[in-house]
Amino acid sequence: MAAKHPRLIARPCFQQDLQFVQLIYAHHVLTGTGTFEIEPPSLDEMTARWSKVVGRGWPFMVASPPEDVSRVLAFAYAAQYRERAAYEKTFEVSVYAAPTSLRRGAGSVALAEVLVGLRADGVREALAFIGDSANAASIGLHKKLGFRHVGTLTEVGEKFGRLLDVIVMQRTLAPSAAQTEPTNS
Image (cartoon, rainbow, N blue to C red; front, side, top):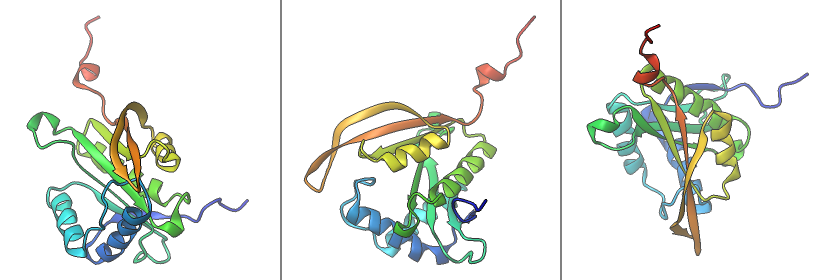
């Protein structure tokens, strides 16, 4: 039986990939409600964002077909949720797929590898803030990867003349200190 979707690999995003990352993201900015940005960031701005993430050692991954690793079908990355020290083990994740790769597993491949990297770095919690409560594809992708719905921010965004909710999803990556302490028997 043939695979439902072609096999994909996740690999680190390099600077030469950013033109594709910028195009993928621009598509979502201009056509969707998964991001609340209104104007697509320039390649220079996307490069600055990527530099901040990778410069801090945080994961920024792309999904590619193994026969053409220069092709970017999706990207995902993570950044510390807030700059305060108490949040150093809590990260926010983001994922976007090329319009030709939607619902074909590319976003899952990239985001799954980001989660592996976060876990290896000792991150405890991953958060996803999903624009538009009707964004079934992103909500489903995150559920598939073990995220659970933890809240809804009601009508906090406005785009295309619509008031939009944000779905907050969370996944525990590593056991808490309380869970790993030995118990006295």
